[in-house]
Length: 245
Ligand code: ADE
Image 1 (cartoon, rainbow, N blue to C red):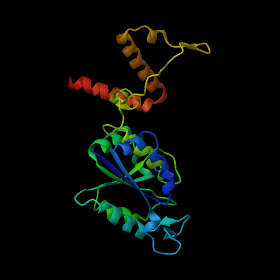
Image 2 (cartoon, rainbow, N blue to C red):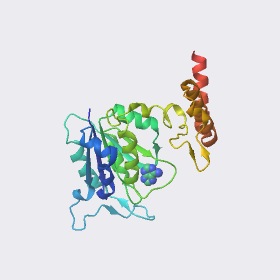
Image 3 (cartoon, protein in one colour):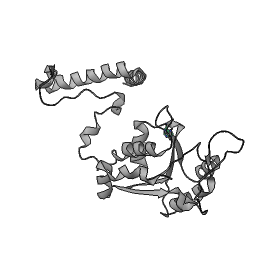
Image 4 (spheres, rainbow, N blue to C red):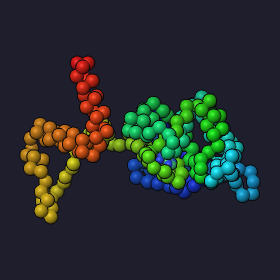
């Protein structure tokens, strides 16, 4: 199955990295079908205007609804019989997590990203399209970016690498950070000693049982130290499993 991704932006060049690396290869392999659109292509004035001053006053500019309406009507109707999931990246949205990435990668086959700039997109665009399609506002974290483009790069990478076939070695997805609610264990390669820092003995022992236990302990220790919030969720989940069993 191919995941179709459309991105509507006033800075198409920002999305150039989608040609590179794993995502670029997945596109060439036909696993991803990516379309980047310039919102200004749906304007009709000489200056290709997409923004205006906010009603009610206040700082900054707001994106006008008409170019968004024309762009989304055209893009969303381009595959008759298919329904896109619209995603607007923004600091006021639900948190984008690994679980969200997994859901998008496995349950959706068409994502349309709306990149807002300035103070945001006129609220009526959300009203109009949330009534017609599934629409999610998603935030990368509690900080403010200048626009949605960098967030789209992060989200598409997190989603695309979970699409079957994009990453050759599926095993590398199993033990990484945020799978199973824990952070990743530390990894080492050659040489065995570097600037007086030695690789932990146990990893050279060849005892796979002990190595697996050590790695699990490292994940627990790291998660408790760096992300007590995740650790609490993990413990709750473990306790819950205990009750059910
Ligand atoms: N756009 C601006 N800030 C953002 C954030 N924190 N996450 C996603 N999109 C954004």
